[in-house]
Amino acid sequence: MTAPAEHPDVPVSADDAAALSLAASIRIVKGNPTAEEVATLAALLIARMRLQQEARAQQPEAPVHRLPLPRRPTFVAPGAWAS
Image (tube, rainbow, N blue to C red; front, side):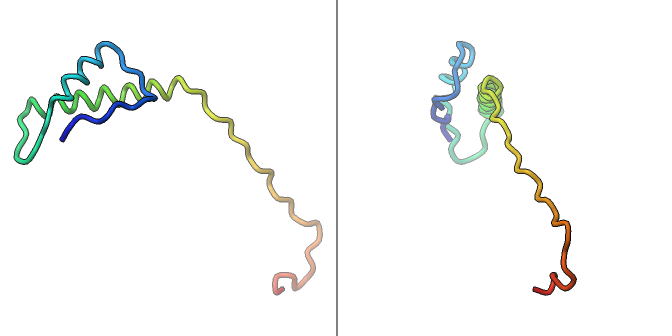
């Protein structure tokens, strides 16, 4: 397993750049990974998720436009349900 590719929408800070460069050299192939490999991978994923959440928080939310509710007709003829 290798580190994920850089995402262009997510900015990288100096602390995270060091973690990303370290994680780029991590490779977990077959077998049981060591505790250090798992911990480094977890730290990388947490840093990446935090960066994505910060990027989403900076973006303004899109406005929601709701459709008007349909009005019921004032008169429904008897037997109109059958047509």
